[in-house]
Amino acid sequence: MTEADNGVLHTLFHSDQGGHEQVVLCQDRASGLKAVIAIHSTALGPALGGTRFYPYASEEAAVADALNLARGMSYKNAMAGLDHGGGKAVIIGDPEQIKSEDLLLAYGRFVSSLGGRYVTACDVGTYVADMDVVARECRWTTGRSPENGGAGDSSVLTAFGVYQGMRASADHLWGDPSLRGRKVGIAGVGKVGHHLVEHLLADGAEVVITDVREESVRRITHKHPSVTAVADTEALIRVEGLDVYAPCALGGALNDDSVPVLTAKVVCGAANNQLAHPGVEKDLADRGILYAPDYVVNAGGVIQVADELHGFDFDRCKAKASKIFDTTLAIFARAKADGIPPAAAADRIAEQRMAEARRP
Image 1 (cartoon, rainbow, N blue to C red):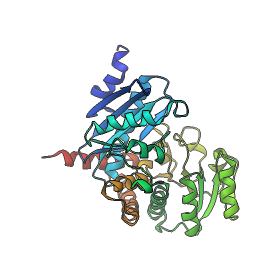
Image 2 (cartoon, one colour):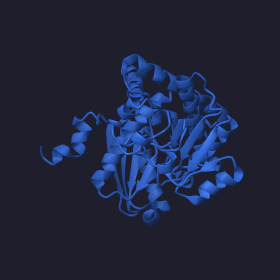
Image 3 (cartoon, one colour):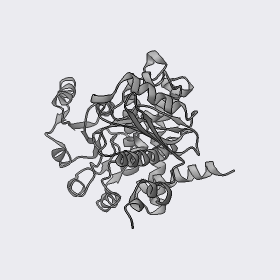
Image 4 (spheres, rainbow, N blue to C red):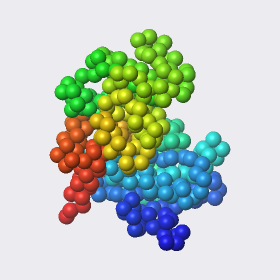
């Protein structure tokens, strides 16, 4: 097999990870913009997904990331019950060095040129203020500030959705959706994690936290002295009597090193791409640990930004995010019926919804 066979075009046209409808390479020399917009599917509606601004090691790596992220958004949006397909954009470069108003405006013009096939939002390296700039050139922009007709910070509903996933996990495993008296460990108490702490304490859970940022930990423990903090994630996953582990920071938290020592019976968190590789979920199942698929339970944020297109209404979004409870239970039921792990069951349900939408 040649190097080209292993490259982006092979992924796009020939692999199971491909199947994308459209990939657009964008360049604006005046501003320094180099971007990739990947549309995986519009079977359910316009593709929706954020814009990642990141200093990729190569253009090929940027394209590969856009393809993977866009595909993931198709599944997330399908499972969230949204009338949106999956898409993602990446801007190549260090946002601290090259981000400018002119670059964002140029990017907005490229998104606008797609005529609504792709709807963008925030992601790593982009923020509400950036989307306000992009929106000046592109009406298919979400994640804007309330002052500019947007919904603002989406972490509130992301945390609420994760909490609903936890309630469903508890109901499936212990026959009661309440977390009262359960010990829950949260790795990462930043934007999403600190809201999750509030939900759990209100429900009567015992909460243990950790974060690489000491100020984030202090903010929680100062407000809630009953919350326990441990040194790091390595200590958290070994806490005796842990019922639920919530990875809410970086991806890859569930790996060959962490799973064998994890004391929790449930994993349900906000972090994306928690499984370091596909075999990890079987390892969890073999240890009797219930895994709530991350792209299902953390969909509150995308539910929120999608609502901007219809005139944002928080109560409407919260009602939709509350359905993550039912969706998670349905995944567990499908997994049991088919004899497969929950992540595989979620994929099957999402693929079924997309396939049915394609039928004439």
